[in-house]
Length: 121
Image: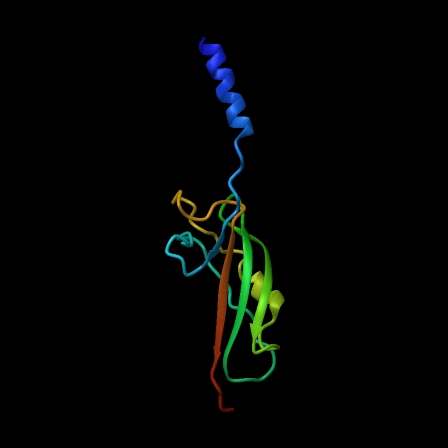
């Protein structure tokens, strides 16, 4: 009897649908960066003052690392180097300890904001 029950449990587990990946915004309180995580500052392009915004989305890896990042939009265009903005996430890791929070395979979207003041020379 136990063998039949164990077999049925195994079959049910194999046929269970996998969790659908979720999309998260970095502003969500369940999206937390690991204490040892760090981001780099992307390189501004050209000579300008004011603010520039770039929205980037990444896939959460098994260790919480942000992988397969890509730029979604930039406002105004031409002020942030997209390659360095994506590379800024190479040492960033999410804290995956909360079961209600992001899981590997989910995506996280974040907005980078660069402020650049006018400098006198």
